[in-house]
Image (cartoon, rainbow, N blue to C red; front, top):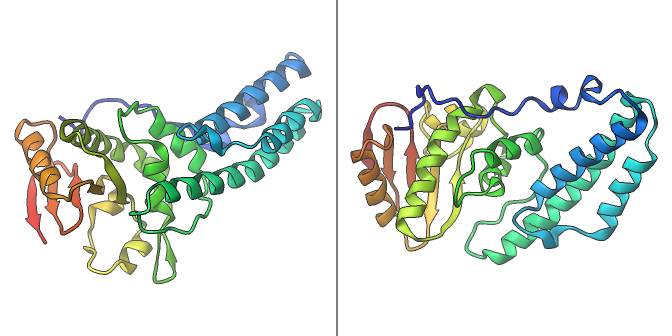
Length: 260
């Protein structure tokens, strides 16, 4: 059973600042430091475009490789050079990838791309959950939403593990239904963003990062039924809401059911 109070320990990615601090760099010699940074940089980019290798352009990759090879021997300066280049390249690649994904799924509401602070590390956390069907870019997508001029954001790192339980439920629904998850309509909502969403509950579980609104191919009916079946099997304990176009699932730790 997956609940917010589960004792199951999940991988929690460290903060970007801690992960990429100068003290984490190998200190033996400049070559080792460069190899370390090269692996770190290219691994991060590989994760970004894991769902679409065509998002990479040779120019972007060449620029990063050159930055790694030509960076300063000083660990801190080298790190700053690489991260600066990575930041520019990451933003460009994500924008390309987002455009490709939107074009491939014309039924999704369009979301203007914007880079989310810390999204590379959060995407790595999601990737390490080893879900069968749900990819990091699908989870990140609703965090780019804007309502009434208020931009949503990623959850605080202290809340990351909460969404893991709910994502496992969503992944199991997708597995048993055998129907594609078209998109995630809502995941974490910041308090300010939640207040700007029409019809949102003032104490929404989206603000606790344990709720998902899921749009499945064929409508929400079968997904609502499967969520109830899983809950009946004690796969999770939480809320199930049926709406006209999506199913709400959360892992609040107590059962609740409603239709709107």
